[in-house]
Each structure stands twice: as C-alpha cells, then as structure tokens.
Image (tube, rainbow, N blue to C red; front, side, top):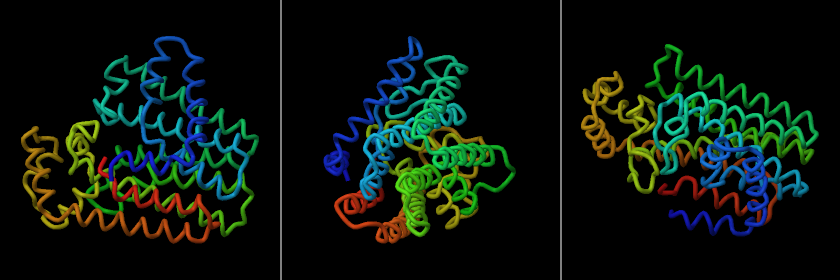
Amino acid sequence: MPRDRLDTLLEPIRADIHNVETILRKIIDQMEEPVESMLKTSLRGGKRLRPAVVILCGRLFEIPKTKMHRLAAAVEVLHSATLIHDDLVDNATLRRGRKTIHTVWPVGAAVLAGDYLLAQSVSLVAQLDNPGVLKILADTLYTMSAGEIDYHYSQRDRKRREVYFESINAKTASLFASAMEMVGVLAHVEASKATDLRNFGHEFGIAYQIVDDVLDVVSEKKSLGKPVGSDLAQGIITLPVICYLERRENERVLNKILSGKGNPKDIQAAIRLIRESGAIDDALDEAMAHARKSKAALSRLPAGKPRRALYDLIDYVVERKH
C-alpha cells in the first residue's frame, strides 16, 4: 500500500497533525545552532503514525484537543529520541534516507540530542498535570531502556522467537501500548476500556514492528530509506531470519553473517535465500495474527468514525510496502 494511502487515511485529522507539528517546531526553534539542525534532522519526516493513533483514540473519548495534541507530540518526541540512541547503538548510517546524526555530528553531541528530546517528552507530559500519565511515561522509559540493554548485552539466544518478541515488546509495542494507556487515563475510562486500549496499542505495535522487519528484507533501498538488509548486517536477528532458521537451522551463509564473519555478498545471498524460502510469508502471517488481536480489542471501544479510521490504520500497517 503506497504512502499516499496513509496520507488519505490521515486527511480527516490533518488539522490535529498540523497542531502537533507546531509543537515539534517550537521544540526545535528554541534551540540555537548546531543543536537546531540536529533536531530538525531527527524530528523532520516520518509517518506520524504514533501521533495519529493518539489523536484518533483521543477522539474516541472526546479528550480536549490541547491535551490530545500535547500527548501526541510527547509520544513522537520520545520516539525520535529513541531512534537517535538506537542508531548510535546499532551503528546505523541511514535513517529515512538521510545520514544518521552520529555520522554527521560528534557521538557525544548525538547522545545529548537524544537526551534533550527525552527531557522534552517528559516536559510535555508533565504539562498535562496528571501524575498517572507521568508515571506511565516513566514506566515506559524504563521498559524500553531495560529491553534494549537486555537484547544487546544478555547471553540469551537471539535466534529464539520468545527473545525476539520480548525485544519488540520493549522496543516498539510498549510505546504504542503506553500511549493508549495514557489516553485512557486522560479520558478517565473504566478498567475494562483501559485494558482494551492498552491491548489494542500493544498488538498494533507488534504487527507494525514485524512488518518493519520484513520490509528490511524485501524492500528496495529507495523506498526503505536505508540499505536493504541493514538489520542483518548489524547482527540484529528479526522474525524473517528466525523463520528461515526454523526451516533450515544449519544454514551456513546466515550463520556466518550472524557470527560477524560475513561480507556484503554474503548478506545479499542470505537475503535472497530468505526471500525464496517462505520465511517472509511465515512472518507476515504472524503480523496478521497480531493485527487481528488489535482489531478485536478495538472492537470493544466506542464506535464511530475514529474507530473506523483506526481499523484502516491497522490494515495499512500490515499491507504497507515501505
């Protein structure tokens, strides 16, 4: 599904997205160079999917727009901060078709830029004047940080599905789930609705990340905005790789890459093997299963145009091509 499909889906909330963009611009404009340019790089672009989900869920419960926009901006700023840190840890060179911050600026400056955005996210949430929402944000920061530390530095076998899902729960799903939980607190929803909101966000996030990992294997560089197979080149084991190894456990080329001894030709050969093996379909089936769970949780939330739009966003997530 092409990008203009997402633009069409977000058209009914375009004014809300614009207000979120205004908040993001203020965060950038209050800094001087060179920090201003660094922040423009990290906050510019992106699908704005996280703010969109916050806004639509906020509309389900008629949350005041000012609060909804501030929360949506806080979630996007937190996401941008984690991307800066993730790119640095993974030594990634491209993000959204542009050079990553740590490849252009000193590493220390990139770390501080990410820290600055984390602080801005906390500040935006604090302005909501709701201790419950602030606690959820703090718990999310802990979950995401602890998950990254565990994935990169534990001795666990990263070729196992449960390790992969624990990682994406912490890395991606936790932010979607927590954002929905914060919406529930602001809307003062009952316990059952709070659970449905969190489950919707959690399953949505898992489906999104699985498809993102599939695209790293099946897309072209131009549409992906980074080298194809960059996760594999960095030694990051994603679900398509795991599905392939489940089919062919003793695969020589792939194991060579994962041991750090592969070269660019090996990576291209591995990508071709994964594409031809049926592993991509296995991974996409898993993404669809989580999309269905997300829709099931969403079906228990208030009906109306926002809910229909959220159903469409779930479909977009599992059908997108970049």
